[in-house]
Amino acid sequence: RFRLMYSNVAWRIDSRCVLPRGEEFDSRVVGDPCIVRDEEAGAWRMFYFCADSKGCYTASALSRFPENAGAGDWEKQGLVPLENPDSLAVANNWHKWWVIMEAGACNRAARINGRYWSLFVSRDPDKVIQAACARKLEGPWDVVSRPILMPGDGDDLDGLHCDTPTAYWFPDREEVLIYYKGYPGVLQDLQPGSPFGSGVMNAVWSPGEESAEKTGVLLRPEGQPPWGRGWLGGFQLLGDSGRGWYALLNASPTPPEDESHREPAPSLGGWAFCEGRDPARNWMLDGSKSPFLRPVELSPEQERSGMGVNFWRHHMLVTDDGQARMYFNSGAYGHEQMYSMTAVSE
Image 1 (cartoon, rainbow, N blue to C red):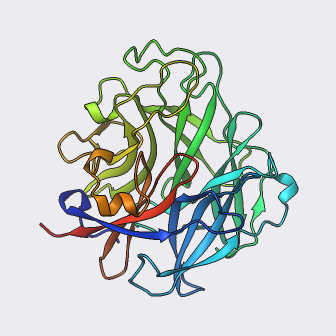
Image 2 (image 1 turned 90 degrees about the horizontal axis):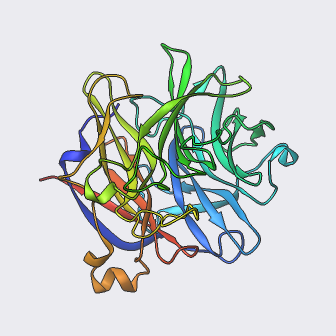
């Protein structure tokens, strides 16, 4: 179970690269991790975004040790095996893989009716969210051909893209709560400070159903602390309803200038908090302990290691003995590698 409120501890940067770029499928990008315990492998399994000159994919890595999970502690396993790659919306564009986790149990994959389920992003040509299932976390994974989330209509916040999903299983409700990033296709009147900025949206889904049901916008950049007034995205749910929900996410103080729908630098990691027991509503960004780090604060050693420009897609692993490590990818856009921070008791 999730034992500590890790928003109340300090974090120390580890300048060593956790997963460097390789020479094949991950020659350009290594990042956006999702880590769950794989009991059959007796290790932590990391699913990560990888890219080469031909496309974007999902690969995996296994930890070599039960507790240590930093630089040199992971072994790459190659691309995630798919039973039916023909069901991908685009053959060379399936990335940002997220294994559905148990709500309130950090890094524990949910087994639902005997299967594990994952969500991921593909492009058709706009970004959509597909699902896949497997009896083992190592795969092979059976891809559901029809996307479960597609861009909305008109002035919806997700009118252009549905991106960066995370998802959690609530057995008492028999449904999955999905968080995802919505990119607008047109100017958003409700966020005049960042009219083209992305935000965090919600949906609910029962695995096996044809599509997820969108339930609304969770967080817009408008009205947020300065570090999150440009755009928001990525959302790792932490805590539980008995002690309060909080989350890791990425944001930026810099709004997109026009319809380009890019994510202007810097990308920063920080906290969000839920005011209540329902994790599908009443969230706010933290303005006192966030962001963790800004690019201008990097040391010469950290810059030499390859960090800079952005800190994307923060993800936390809490091992069985309570050690916590937070992962993120950093570097020039399109050429990132993975780094980490460790929790330090105050």
